[in-house]
Amino acid sequence: MKRRIAWLAAGLMAAFSVVVILPSAYAAVGCRVTYAVTNQWSGGFGASVTIANLGEALNGWTLTFAFPDNGQKVVQGWNATWTQNGANVSAANASWNGSVSAGGSLSLGFNGSFTGSNPAPVAFALNGTTCTGTAPTSTPTTFPPTTPPTTPPTTPPTTPPAGNAWNPPSSLVQPLAAVWSHQEQTYSNLYGFRNYGWDQLAAGGGAINYCVRWDSTAHVTAAQRDSIHAALQRQYQKWMDQMLDNGQGWNNWPYTQVPVKVVGWAVRDRAQLEWTDTSVDITVGNINENAPQCSPPCARFFHQDGNYSGCPGGASRHYDHSLWLTAGFQGGAGGDWGQRVGSEYFLSNVNATNIHIFLHELGHTYGLDDFYDWDPTPGQGFIMKAGSATQITEFDKWMFRDWWRHLKSRYGR
Image 1 (cartoon, rainbow, N blue to C red):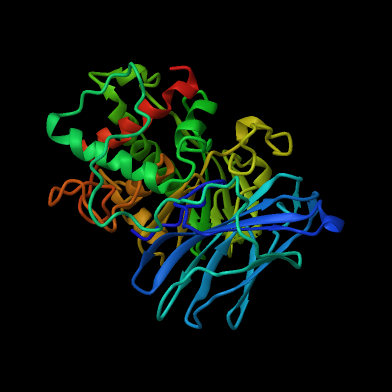
Image 2 (image 1 turned 90 degrees about the horizontal axis):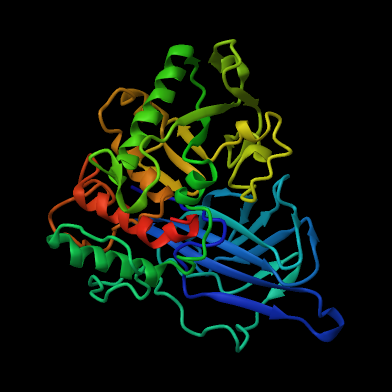
């Protein structure tokens, strides 16, 4: 599946970091921009852009850069208003992220297209301040590779957790070690990132809230709404069940059932929703990324500190993930923000045993990687290798468990 990962502070980092330190008269001003090609397919790619504010607090910002190749285009962006004129690209703050504290950071991203090569931009400017220097000497000069290795890594993880159960089938031990080593090489902030699905689940005490972004002009009946909600619960539990052995949590996993509740829907026009009850909050006309979005003050993506004081329904109406259902969308996308699939696809499979594209994208929310360029289990197939399986396999289960054993200490387990 083509995917877009909008990690707030981390992703698969390209070896490209630009820093500017201005003359002494402007010593309080500075910026660092990290540009990442998160994934690439024939004629298209996904990219993330992280901006670190090294100077004074910002109240409104615009990032500008130029693509090196004339065939590179921004197709769809998020967390900013994206425009392009020729090779020149501009990303201006959205209504909710214009203020950036000193030392704070921003995470933007976009899906793009290209016709020739796809080189990284070589210069950025923030509010007219050009970020053109090299990294300070204290910054590491080596970075993770921009693409997965051409051959699977064989070295064991560099930071194996101590004293934890690890009992996968013997045939999977080496492939699992290769996967974790690969992730350590390609995720620049693997252990420091704090908004994986694991973090969201722990913050919710073992429960997950959703918002549905109805990115379609079609109407939705109450029966369709309820079937979508029920499907979310069933499909989500399929990943949670991978942590159970005979109904008991593996390796101190604390949850046997994970309640999934849909607390909101976002639409362009209220008349599209053919119900009048108040079972969910409804957001109308809040368009972001050219799609309806539930209230940002209620989103964990924007409030990882758990402060939902601006959410009209309070903390109980916050949402951890968005289910973004887009008319005509092919494939899927997933990250800490949630999962995106085609609205027609989801509804046509709403009663299916496995909604496999959704399951694949939910795996990304919990940190699991894609496998576009290498296969740790050649010929066997598994759901995180897009198109090779239609259900969660034993290999997927143990990759999922590997994440838990490496992160569980942060939750006191």
